[in-house]
Each structure stands twice: as C-alpha cells, then as structure tokens.
Image 1 (cartoon, each protein chain N blue to C red):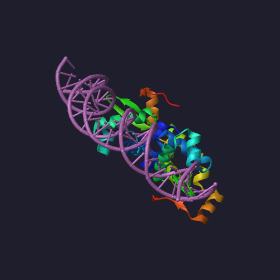
Image 2 (image 1 turned 180 degrees about the horizontal axis):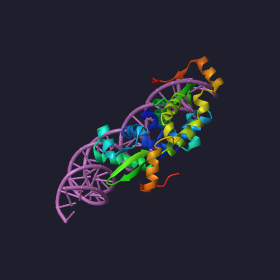
Image 3 (image 1 turned 90 degrees about the horizontal axis):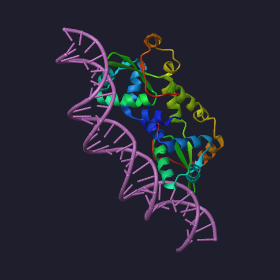
Image 4 (image 1 turned 30 degrees about the vertical axis):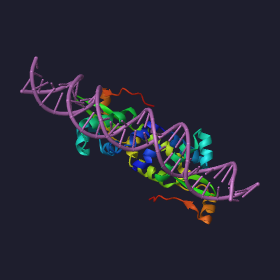
Length: 112
Length: 112
DNA sequence: TTTAAATATTCCTTTACAGGAATATTCCCA
DNA sequence: TGGGAATATTCCTGTAAAGGAATATTTAAA
C-alpha cells in the first residue's frame, strides 16, 4: 500500500479535511473556517494531501477549490481486498482453536 | 477513521510487517529475519502495531507468535464505504464538466 | 542452577514534521 | 494602478518518533 497516502491520512487535521471534502469540494478558506485552522496551516495540510494524490485543486480566480481524487480510495480498497480473508475470519481456524484452548493470549490493550 | 491505525500503518517497516502477517502468523525472530530488521526494532514496531490493535501476540514459551487482528481491517473497510460515491465517480458530474470545459486544473504532481 | 535463546525495554541521538508568525504571490475591482 | 481578498511559502521552534546499542526478562534445557 502507498505509504504516502497513509502518512497523509495519519494526521488528525488532514483526516478531518478529507472527511469534510467527502461532502463536497471546498475552498481553503472554507476548510480553515470549518476546522478552526489558521489559513497557512490549512494550505500546508492541503499541500500534503495534494502531493499524495488525495486531493486536487481547481483554480477559480484567486481561490482554489479542493476536492477528493478517487484513485487513492480505489487503491486503498484494492489493498484491503487482499485482507478480506483475514477480516472475514475465514483463516487460521486451527490456530484460533489452539489459542482458545490454551487461553493464553497476551494483550494488555483494550480494543473495540 | 482511527488515527492510531493510520499512523501505525504509515511507517514502511510496520506496513511490511502487516503484509508479511497476511500470509500467516510469525514470531518476532522470523519477522526480523525476513525484513532484515534488528530484533529490538522488530519488537518496537510490533508493540506499536499491538497498541493500535492491528496485531496480537500468542504466547508460546519464550516466543511470541504475532498475527493480524480482523477488527481494524473491518473498520477501515467500513470507513472506506463512506467514500464509495467518490471513488466510483458517481459524484460531482457538473463540477467535473465545468472543470474539463475550462481545462484549468492545477496539479504539479504526477499520479498513478 | 547456570546457560542460551527469544523477546522486551531503556537510554541516547538524530531527524521529520506540525504549528506560529510573518511575508510573498496572485487576482479582481474601484 | 493601488488596495484588499484568497492562498501559498518561508523561517523558526518544539516535539514525537525511529534507529542503534546495551541491557533486562523470561523460559527451557543441560
């Protein structure tokens, strides 16, 4: 999977920008206002998102209208598909069985 | 989407570990050897993956057998679903049209 | 009960990156 | 053509995180 896409999405503000743009394309100013970011930070985050191919900008005079690009999402989906066997739990039935038998998992963290 | 999962996957070595574990569960030593990592770095990466819920360890004497957990992948898939409209390009037809008409996109980067 | 194997942890150093502040750039319009 | 609006860029600083080296911990086996 493309590490640049992952890194871009691994920053909370950028993730929020992506979630925002899911609704509709927005200008830098609108994004900054909605997310309570300063304009330069919004621009910088959008630059990272742009360089990873997640967003693209459409020029409108002195404004830039940013929107999501479909490709990274398709790639993410394709990548995920190779894990379907895992997350559908059609795998490792034997190991699972042995693990439950022994009841010896070590996990200090809580999940889900 | 869970930022911790994204951050964990945004590191190249950890992404490789996940790709490795897609095949089958492995011990720390096996992972380190296959990826040409020093054992402590492998352990450290596995700790991050474990804390984000991506992997879990099964104790076998003085060895730990790491495997993928299905939940984060399911969550990732659920999150992606909310973008299906985008990556299937069933959206923004009007804007797309106007954009192509003007032919004014600015994108310095090359993608795909 | 010492020894070796497997793994985890700690400490240190370096580097990447996010935010703040200031400034540059581009565009439209009066 | 000068000014303001929208956006991008630069410089600086602090912090998080990754790797290296050394060490601690746990376990089985001799």
